[in-house]
Figure 1: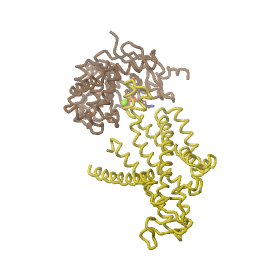
Figure 2 (figure 1 turned 45 degrees about the vertical axis):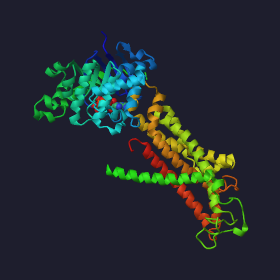
Figure 3 (figure 1 turned 60 degrees about the vertical axis):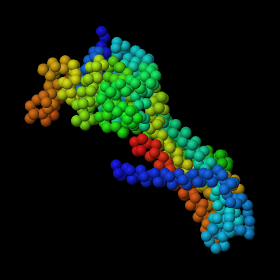
Figure 4 (figure 1 turned 90 degrees about the horizontal axis):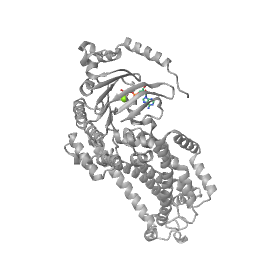
Length: 292
Length: 282
Ligand SMILES: Nc1ncnc2c1ncn2[C@@H]1O[C@H](COP(=O)(O)OP(=O)(O)OP(=O)(O)O)[C@@H](O)[C@H]1O
Ligand SMILES: [Mg+2]
């Protein structure tokens, strides 16, 4: 059985030569939730964007392959790649407000996409959307479908986006910090919803977060990213039982629930970061810039 | 919330006032031969410099008085509205189509398309607009179509700059990325997703530009570079009124008031419409 998503040795650079991804390898099995953790700027969002084919134009992939259900994205024509990504993947974004078009009502926004991806009739798409809205526990679908995005609360908007993401039955969903923009009280509900729909639909999720508590709740496997490099990869339970990499250990020490309360306010240990920086610098030395 | 409601009512009243004046002026322009009390070109030296209706010496049927050749001022203003509106609609629409299209393309595609278009806009705006207009009309020859072309050629940059900036802001939004992920093509996204979000600004600018076109036409008429001098134009009437300001102030004052009301109405109407169109402001 081939992996749902298989990233092999993916490297990407900025125009100034700075590397944002360093030989990233990461696989997500069908139906599995893979957490991707790391501090701000580590490149988590970049990995998600690379998979979904929406990297900023300034970021260039210089090596590596990405396979979506066994199909090598790099070998496909742009059009075929777009179609494949559109049919097999979806995104649950960080900011539910800007992820919805402010000038269009929710209903058409959601159904249009289904009609486009699955070639369904508008009526069938509408039924499907209502079913999904029910699954995300929206009780008044008529009102929501008629609303403009700004007329809904943040939690409502994220529910709508979760429904939209699962509606076309994608094989892989990239969830990029789907709860950080929300109220703390809503965060838990949204997280529970994603986990529930994931189980029911059997969708694989690449779950980006920097909250280790979330990792423990939702994922089976974890990849720890630091400065564009995967520094540790493990089963979630194993990682929490025995983190091997010093950065992972430092990250856990910096997260309240996983250490004693007194240590919880400390940032990630400076000496660990210094060691990592040296390690990555020496790895960069061995790395030659491809022509241009 | 309450503040929002108050300002919405305020903008609603402005919208209705401005729209009302524009509608009145437009209807007068369209039905000018029916509503004008006199022939706007008929001269009568017996009736020269009649004052407006409330002053002593006024003649019935000449509500706003007459000019130094005895022509009825109100009728001339009504017929002048025809040219003002033709120029406003034609020139503003042309400038809007060219400018908004280029702005949308530059803002959405970025890269070299943006660099080329932005460079052209910069070069264009280096010319002083009034000089540019006079130069263009001098080259194209006077006449209604030259005035329209001159205004469109000069003012498309106004649309281009604003729409480019707005489109850029919209293109960075996640909903555009979401549409990309769903497999929509670039042009489809530009037209279906981004364009509706910049339409309110386009509408506001379009209305504002109509007001600007009215002013520019008046300026060109004032310096005698617009339409043939026979047809009454607001700018032409103002120019004549300036000469007889001491004998007949009304020949200057009424066209000025008409002009200012119309220009203000266009800009207020545009702002009001924008607020109505914009789902977030609404
Ligand atoms: N549009 C862009 N163009 C160029 N570089 C970018 C762009 N967006 C982000 N970067 C850079 O790429 C690197 C990785 O950023 P990325 O957004 O993937 O981090 P992240 O792990 O998602 O962080 P966060 O937790 O803050 O979301 C950072 O160094 C960032 O400065
Ligand atoms: Mg991110």
